[in-house]
Length: 107
Picture 1 (cartoon, rainbow, N blue to C red):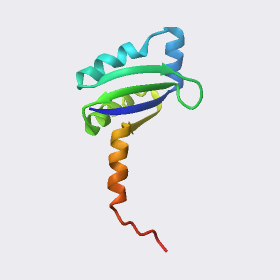
Picture 2: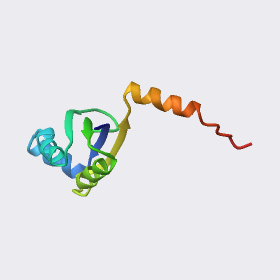
Picture 3: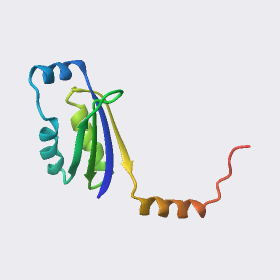
């Protein structure tokens, strides 16, 4: 399965709802993710540009996109970013493939 970094920011209404009724949002996300064949490795509240950072596994990019669409369509998020993560073995394989390509930059 592919591993993803998820970064998200809540809208003002969602933050207001959580202040009024504190809740563990990982508990809400985990079953939904498992339903599409994924696994939530961890989810953290953060300071700064994003309110939430999560590490998750998804069966494929289409499933990761579908999950992002489902969460995004709720209206709770002001922003949502999914970044595919490569293992070091995958990165080395990509480097080897790149070494065999002859790209010519614009001149």
